Amino acid sequence: MQTKFDELLEFPCSFPYKVVGNARANLADDVVAVVQSIVPGDYTTSEQASSKGTYVSVTIRVTVQDKPQVESLYQRLAAIEGVKRVL
Image (cartoon, rainbow, N blue to C red):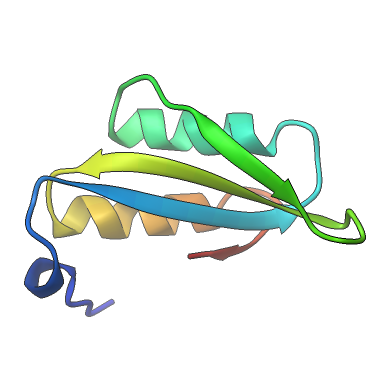
């Protein structure tokens, strides 16, 4: 994956991830677990359900150190069961 995060961002920086997936009780916990495995720390998330309640978006803000860390988080978050998109 060729991205331009290193050209567009000054590291370290606070970076928001929005994970959209099937609505389920522990999606936010799974998102936090993945982030903590790459960037240990205390995290809070915000959740927003879709209008029909089928999907939920979980937003988490992470202080990333470099381009590989940004990309790794995108890949690992996208691999969570039920996740449809990572923005």
